[in-house]
Length: 122
Image 1 (spheres, rainbow, N blue to C red):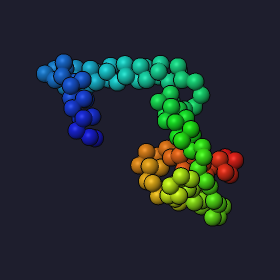
Image 2: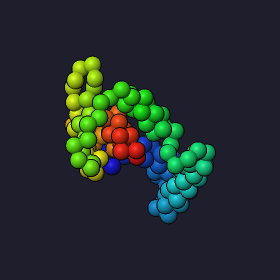
Image 3: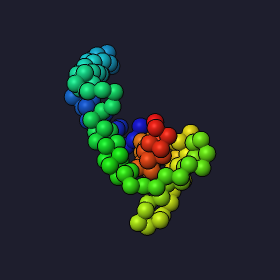
Image 4: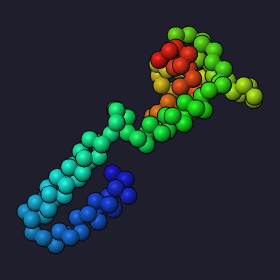
């Protein structure tokens, strides 16, 4: 648990901190129920399988992937080059890696990976 998550949970439990243990457990149970219902409500509003904030990132990367030169090296390995600068990146779709490291850090495909996947009609 990160410091922010621990502090957030600590702050949420503040009203029941001095309660007897059973009352504290009941407070935690109710708080969790409230959080779960809130999240379930948010998820039910989603259109499709991808959350809106992730969808925005993917659309931005898709737009940025246009105009990249993709050269397949093998079934899953690609060299993706920015045309004006001729700066290249290596994308391995099987391992979900790119030498720009954005794919690994975010866990979402970078513009190079999207261009490579488009080359394979994925």
